[in-house]
Image 1 (cartoon, rainbow, N blue to C red):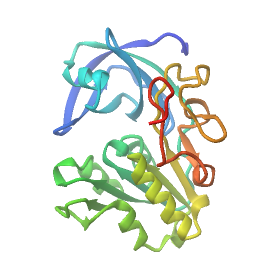
Image 2: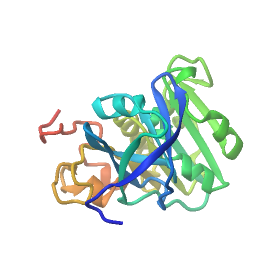
Image 3: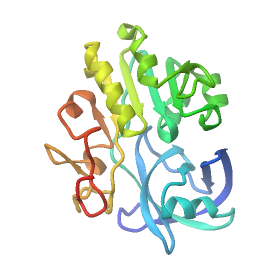
Length: 252
């Protein structure tokens, strides 16, 4: 498969997961590791990076022009897919997965692949929780909601702080940046930072490490090529949770 040209795929069905999140299924399967991403081209709009939530699906939160347009497409319409790119999660032993919001998408294939997973799922409130039926069947699911409507009342980092992490060999994390920074800090405080694997999201234009738009400070690692999954100890001194760059490379 060429890295430079998208493969056109036909949308087969769309599932509304929450009021602002939909899963888009298409008619081609892509071989990818859990946590790898593809570049999704919405014709006439934009091309954006998205994690695969399955071999033939992406899960879309409507937050910008491209994702809003994706949310309006119908079965039978076409989108372009380039990839998969980057690295994925590489857990072993007893696995703890931690997701916030649509960050559950790249962790869903992991939950389906392994049988020894405890899954911490966070969201603002009960209606915002993703994949609860699937995850409750294949993982030991623990839920945290900001408003306390389901499960632990608070953030997933607070729930994590109360847990014994000595039984886990890998901690795989994806979600909003500040959530991941809080999780990283908890792992650090408990002396298990080396177990953490964090999936980052950044602006990307090429997806293959040429344009530099997704580089992170201070080492200049490209999220598309060297990530999107990074070890916790690599991120400890990085920009994670402090700032990121906009589409023009400016700090924001």
